[in-house]
Amino acid sequence: MLFSDGKVRADYADFVDRQIAAVRRVHAGEEDLPALHADKLVRTLVAAADSRQFGSVLAGWRDEETVVRARADEPAVFVEKMLAELAVLSQAEFRSGSSAVFTRPIGEFLHYYESSGTTGDPVAAPKALDDLAANTINIGEMWRRVLTPADSALILINGPFAPAGYQFEKVMEYLGVLSLRLWVDNVTGDYTRILRLLRELSVSTYVGSPSRLLEMLHFAYRHGEPLPRFRRLLLMAEQAGPSLLRHLERLTGAKAFVGSFGSSETGTTAATCEQGRLHLQVQSYLFELADSRGIRPVRGDRDEGELVVTCLDLRARPLLRYRTGDLVEVTGTPCPCGVALPVVRTLGRVHDVMRLGGDGVRQEDVESVLWAENSPEPGHFTVLNYMLVLRGSDVVCLLTTDREPEAPSLDAVRRRLAGLFDGRNLSVRTVPALPPLASLGSYLGWKLSRLVDLDDPAMTDRLPPPIAEVVRVSLAEIEASTGLRPAIPLTEGTR
Ligand SMILES: [Zn+2]
Image (tube, rainbow, N blue to C red; front, side):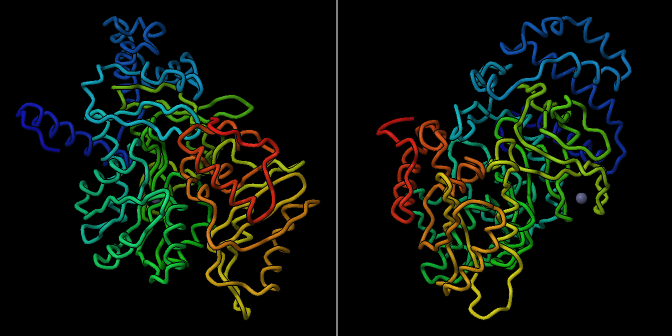
């Protein structure tokens, strides 16, 4: 970051030095975490008292005496007590007026961003200098275990309003890694120029969503371009289970990592180490887990639930006990990399389960069937990508493949999948390209992007304007290839 103002420059350098030192102490297990948490929570509550969202509940924190008393408390007791007192902030409540959490005038932020807003109202997610630096250092200190300055990175994140592309560019700057932040037109989906640059520059690393990568690989297949090869994939923004990671590794020759986890509004709550495990960034967040039994703090042991976060390094727009909608498992076992941060596994979004009668079918169930280890049987083909279409008792699985499969091998896939769809009429067919919804997994989640439930009104009437056209085109393509139409027709100009 360059600043003409000498004092800003000096203060920033000092802040960055202290932040890096603290992160490294936390990684090494040498930091007094309860004391760090208590100190950052006090500062966060004092800041939050200046916001419309928390101003009345936290009015007492504008009083110096409250701060003095809090600082006299035993740190761990203070943090636990405050978490018990603060209300949980639901996504719906936050979305109804996200700028209410601002504690500074908008002009004091550095960059304005919003969440993509494709599944609801966009939420304000501007970046201030301090939270941008803290988040960049958090990711950078993890990724420097994976990347070196000899690497180069393609950042392929279509989303001009959201901060992710810019954020990862800052991380590459931090690591001294050459980066290209590129773009593909959502309509034409033309990757020719990107593929050329990947070849010319021998780009080693892909940063972006799995569905975007799959779309680029499929484009290369269809256009007779050589498949891009990478050394590693740093994937994010949508659920990537073991089957999907192995699938992408086979296609690209790379080692695939779930690179980071988080959201535009919270920042990056977890980042990968060289062992491919996501570590919770406990120096910058208080983490809790919610399920039907209630909400409890993340401690060292194995646990799972919906992640609830209190941001400690986001004082320009604090989020206190914010329900993220993301399901995670805290593994409770230390990582061989030696970093003293808890390891977490992502389990998808709370709503990303396909309900079919009794048990749900999950993304991983489908993908472990479709992307089972390649068999050496003759006529073998590779499934590149898929979309499931549901309508009444019909399930149609649309596939893109590397070559046109023989009928018996396609039927073998159908038989393997049939186990998941007991009592339904399952058919499998190949298409030259999937409907455009399939590449929007990072915005819509798995269920809305790969699983088109034509009986679900959300598919046709609850999706907001930015993707209404994509949905319309997708539904038309689905009808053309399967004959299936939505139960409730999509009306012109609807949202
Ligand atoms: Zn690790």
